Length: 407
Image (cartoon, rainbow, N blue to C red; front, side, top):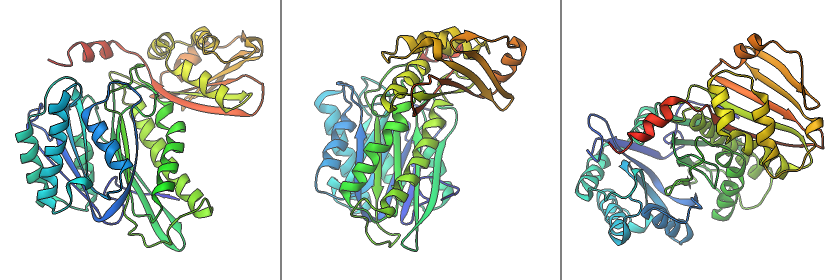
């Protein structure tokens, strides 16, 4: 497997464009378009929040239907959530605009929105944006990067990744872009992510691969404990790599899954590391659990602990908060058997052994915790189960960003 430059335009036959439609933001692009030369098989996973945005409902119908997918239209600034029948009609109007501009069926267009909940889309600007983007579609890396920037809301940096693998002597590429900074909590996948591949793979296995992968990637991130109304991950496969179609769970399928994991884990960590107001990516590794389920519970509990997140912001080795969060996770373990380490580029330090603090240097611990990427490793000594979760520190700026969000 080889990491390569780019994102949604890295795979053969995929193009992207972006534009400034003036939906909510001024002086920046706020719409993106992804298009495939060939019709695609589509897979998707969506928010488990009972309050689902109109685009989520539209995309669920497309992914679960029989129509091929050809394009995705994304806007930033307004979420088109809690907008009733009018919001659903605007999804249809957006798809119609794309169908007309690209010469494809309306049923092959997916839509996605992100931003303020409860506001109606300015559909005239959306339609005009689609019309403006269609002739600008390009397979260049730069076009994919501009699209990744256009879908940002409170994000501070674009998020994209791509890898190449070999399947049946053919080069297969998987690329993607995502956005997410706030309202991020592991519960399906908490953000918008768009993945493209030129692999030839059955729709059934495409969906299986995506659903299995999000359990250890997007579902293992958290910024603030809030699950969005718009969470969507879409995966499009156009088959243009020319490999023999993957129709069974063989070595080719496993290689495809490994590549998908690399892209999704990279994107998930980019989201966690760009949490609203954050200064550090916080990683939690659980080792020695009785099974995977126990390890996941423990890792998620620590990564979502507000007190632990605040301690990371203060570069404070307050290990009691981590042990406490493990204790209320619902997973059974013996606190008197836990070893805990802190690790970063500045070094690695054992903080507690068998549930009791060691005679460690607070100054050295602060140095380790002052890096932009920090890891806590807890060994519960019960078995071979492992899990990793990603989050960020909790800062003053998180409150300010969300207090001022609509204004």
